[in-house]
Image 1 (tube, rainbow, N blue to C red):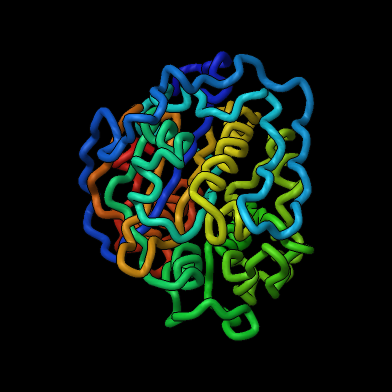
Image 2 (cartoon, rainbow, N blue to C red):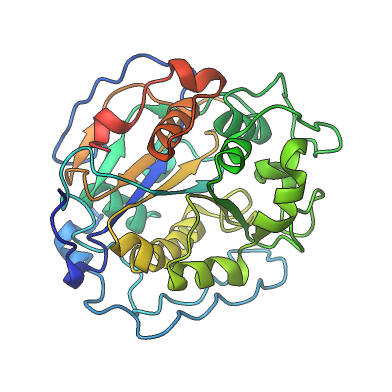
Length: 356
């Protein structure tokens, strides 16, 4: 039985994970360590990153509307309702290994190799989160460019896709995790920042359909019209109401995901949304895992960051096992009770590495 949630930390009941990928799938070998292998000296320690000690008394405000397309970093979303934008203590190490998780949240960032984030003074929040929870130190993207990584992570294969074209070029009749959960009577939702309307199949402004995998799978097109939604205000509302689905796919827009803007911009965006998630009822119920990942690195380096935050993660864990997007898919399928798609069947799970 997990220990009782730590109300003072607001998060003793959920899990947060940041991930990347690799093209091979060896069995997971776990090498816990006290600190990330590339933790910067400027990163704050866990003791300096405490969250507010009281849950918000009302639903948090929705983030501010998207500003006009910027020439530099844009305004980040509105502040967390607790007033904190830092990693909360008590997020990890509050439950036994093998703790039950009923909700999995993925947050996908863009196009940054491991060393651009881990150890970077431009990413103080991400490094603090890694230090206070867990880090997958050997996690790589599967391929290039973006789209085949998104498809592989949600369907177990990229089906030969090697470009970033839209759903009209790649209508996929194959099964996906979205379809698996629909068939199982479970729930999913994609939260797409700056998307103009539900299940938009064409890019618009800062919304890139290539970062919205649910829009490509034809078997779930009807469900996509309902469950693939603009991030604002849906995500803030669902967090506050404790109404997160079994599986959430969260996509920042082209600036906040660091595709077009800086590592610092993405770090600030995450420093707003991750504390908001872990302060919510689902997280505090002790059964929510959140995943933040980068789709790929750069053309010469596909080693990407993965930070794992969960009640059953020992703070400071650094896993050395080779992991990838298929590993992330397998882990999610296992936790949510559905079968393995494609490459997930032979991939190493994150479970052993992080006590999930």
